[in-house]
Image (cartoon, rainbow, N blue to C red; front, side):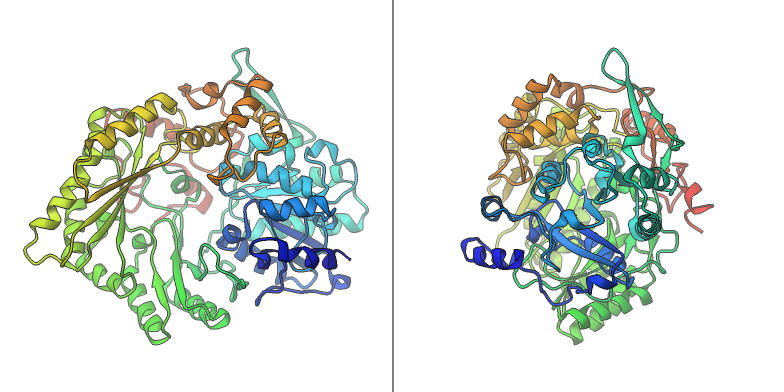
Length: 612
């Protein structure tokens, strides 16, 4: 039996609990009563995947149907993968310990571009043909992908049967219901995919041909067999009524985020021009304080977790933030549960909010100015002033904090050396501020600045922009380091190689698929991990396939160019993105959605104004 073979090998690997299943909260079902099986695959390690909230939601949602069974699958780490291949153990699901290739659906959540090769590796481990075109007429298994990265799925589209756009709480069950019906009718794979293309939010790559111009840009997408010209993402309109689990699977060992987590809002009002999530998760929707409190209590009581996180793009933008935190702190203090909050905004940080935060966060505070000068913050529409940054840090220092972490980006459109030096100057002003406070906390101040290389992403006003070159990245990183004069300031940054590859995969078309396949064949996997990332192998794959990295990473796009994602509709109009790009070049800002509607187009999908 497969289970016996697995158990014999577990003592030879690190963290064997990653591979055995059986955790509290995991769902077991009798196969005889199950009509459709769904293998939910996370293309990274167990420790990362078990921290992902989206998997927890869809896992519970699917399993709430008696005749559907969702099981979890994670990418095995290198040591266990080697043993699996040596001992002919296929990729299997943790609940039943049965091969993934025997499931009806193999679903991947695509969270990060540098996990793409793990999709290929997991399909290979499962014994499933990597290219969708090689899977024949048999109905199962259907390979489906969802998550934020599918807003441009073209680099991996040829490996998937279905791409699910937007939010999955409704469309996933609709897809499975259609499959159940057609499975009983004895349908072929192609017959099912053709019918699935009629479901809003499902994109079937095999039903679209791509035509290219002589210069390598896309001419047009040509739908076949009645497939729609434009595929629109799915959204959940009433966020207070959306499904949310009452319990989580609780792992045996430590994971990255080993805690209960409640999503308090979805979307963002801010319109920061660099932020893909802020646009693709629109419209802004929030849960009521009552609903949040109920879900918090259910999760903490059912899982036994002693730590709780509030999940969102910007929790402090919740319209009932004070009431919510007051209610939650009352509960968490009584139940001895530690409450953690995500990164905070400097423009709505107050003494009252600090008093609440002090009860839940003891170590340090994190803020994201993003750029070192006001001009550049206006370019990216951050709508945060230096006065607000300093006021926020003053409140924090006077409240007893001595550690502050500041997030910045490097390589933003129109950036100059003055903007880079401005990052160091901002950090220095924070240090000086600390020592200017008469009743400051005892000890010395610590200011950490984390600087990421900017990656222009689809569905943002900067999707037209080129990424700066490797040489320029390295030059600006050195300039920043040389500009920091205080030992109280610590600087960290990302590898240029990772940022360049992320950009290529984010804005690539179907030509990237053959590069990805070659890179994987040469051993690329777990590319987001420093110890396994090998950029030279990727470079060799690009050269072998005759694909120019610079064409995707370092090329300025025209406003009328057809992009690989233009046949996918996330409700944010391209005309709006063009307008915002032009405003960025003029250093002009756009008010947030609560202040004034900017006309992005997303109100169409909610049937009226986003805010009443």
